[in-house]
Length: 377
Image 1 (tube, rainbow, N blue to C red):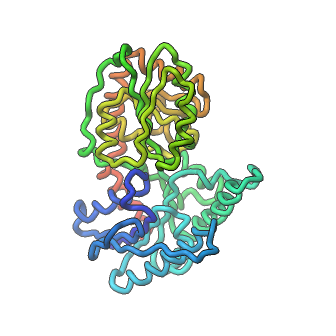
Image 2 (cartoon, rainbow, N blue to C red):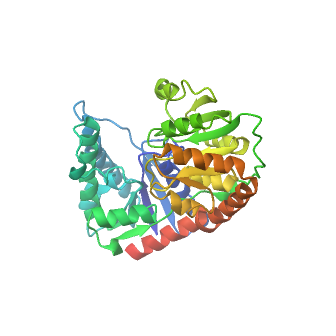
Image 3 (spheres, rainbow, N blue to C red):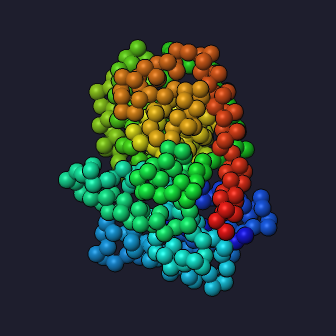
């Protein structure tokens, strides 16, 4: 079986889709009878017979319609690759970029697209807002909806997302599959975190590129309410130009200091999970939440929200603490519960590691992906 994987991101491995693309390439090692090659623009150099790079060039007037141009770029580059690599199936890590390709190869080569969150699905006309952001996302929703109609299969990364795809885009259930994103567990050794020393600043780790969607403001406000403790928040993921806005979140929080890490390599993220007391990404919206999976694997106590697919990762509250998304008081209550219950914290951390081993290991994900592909071919 020959697979051609198309991903707009690859080297930027703080992104969930980039992590997925890297893991899928391991099919080449685990299943010698199969082969995966990747097309992306997010690499410094090509890898012969493995990774193809294309340059990202847009007409000056393309503006917010970049996805339409990316559709064209992917189709052009896919045609070039297929001259020498006869793929059986083409997979788009972001379904929206597969529209033109799926139409062009309908009945010739099978196509699969992934939807990783509900960012566009939720932008229905009934939720109209007179803002530029809403209009851009509404435009993207139209293209995503068209893409899932012509793709042979669509994959959601959680039961939550898969259900939304079926309901909002009016697709038959047989066409939509659920595939949990995963991690290479061997690279996330478990580290037991003891009781939190409340006489020292409690270290809270936040890691999310989209810090607003990740609930960073809500985290700072919740910690500001817990004046009986001192906190140090480590913020990883956002771009450096976003730091002034984030600085404002922590102003006038006398009990909270924070350190801005910005873009952070994976090894440092894992090191921070070992050294911090709590991982808290209280997302307002989330398809699944790979950072929480990594946190559970590493053993750091996880506090999050009930947004999207997060409860599927945390198994309700069996593996962590779950607050109502956007509810600052409830988030403060959950963080305090984590701090004060040492035995419960240990039990949930151990349960979290076991859950990752059961559901979120990359070998299981790749086996499931192969099964999905086989059902398409």
